[in-house]
Image (cartoon, rainbow, N blue to C red):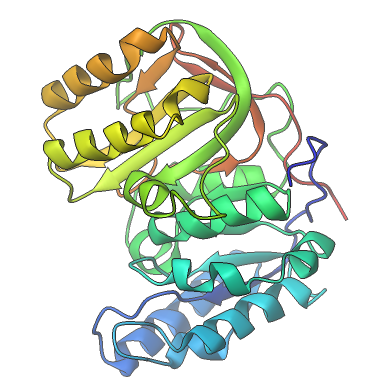
Length: 314
């Protein structure tokens, strides 16, 4: 349950760990090379990494069994020497873990948890039942070692190091113009992630709590009619009528004109601010967003402002 207070999150100083949530058919040697490269790269930045055993496992189309992945996740949160938890990649598999998560353990050991795409299911569940901010941000394989341009990395670490707090504007690169779908100002918790995953957990105890939020959505490899279907699903479920505003991230592979038309059709009747084109998701650069943090969205001025601290210095 969300308590509304400033989340008790650890300031990221030195120690991190990497987890994996889906195996996409690469040979184990390829995965191992990526992890070793990541270990080396992050050490040059001053961080020590602990790599959990599930990174090297495979269970069909999953990165290890549910039990292995759950064990790693719980161990990472429980370990007092780990400052932050990063997912190695997305794909599919996190919804299988939700009904076995130990939310009491997570609530007692809050720390930055970073990932996107399939990781959305964990963001939603942690925010709803553990009540602390998580980070929709870059992962090792596709982003931090994938040659993605700045401010992918700087956006992430400026938040995790506590360099951005209440009153800070979340910077957006001017090279990527934003689009105001509906002007206006709204204040609320920023929550959401991958649109397909948000829809997939509807009707479960882990569905998005949309009351008064700034809804963030992104997606990849979904044609425009499927984006329409997913948004219609949320509308018919009553979720869109509950939100205070909408921030639309990257919707990869969809024509921008068609997307803007769909967004206007969907949100204009709701008379809420909607800002589109935010470079978060399956894109380059991939900006980090604090899920569950209180923010102010000004769609007319095309700004997102933090209204709370998201980490603390331990």
